[in-house]
Length: 211
Image 1 (tube, rainbow, N blue to C red):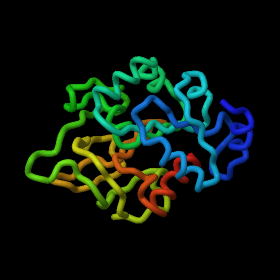
Image 2 (cartoon, rainbow, N blue to C red; image 1 turned 30 degrees about the horizontal axis):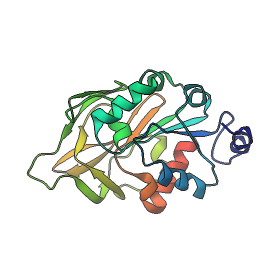
Image 3 (tube, one colour; image 1 turned 45 degrees about the vertical axis):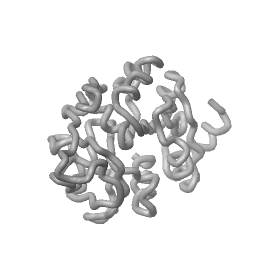
């Protein structure tokens, strides 16, 4: 990791002292769009698959796009499946990243990281799958959504979802009301793509870095 980058991020108006902001790069993430989103906030995020760099980070982003079982296989191949659940700093899972933080996904019958105590299931054929486009987030709770208006529109692309559960901090309706954001301790997850959701998405990322 570039030490100069770390030093610059220590003085970021959005974050605290530590090892800057790291985006986990395990070959299953939309990492460049996320990196650009933080660049717009004045933060030069670091891409890394190194366990020690990730552990030393001030904040961690766990992205993900694609299919659950192949993404978990990539995490296991690098040992990051054992590292991520032990992290103590704020961690934000995005899209598939959030789903992999759950116990299990019916996509490929995949065992997840077990951080969130819920499973991930597929929308039925009663609706168009995947859900692609803008939808509302409601019942917003916690610091991730500080200053975010109820029923804000966020961009989503997904076929699987986390049902409502005790750890949900936002809901979205598509066939059913489901958990579009989760939180447990220092772990956060969002089903939507804040990096692709305009000004409101940027504010959510800013809130995360300010935790």
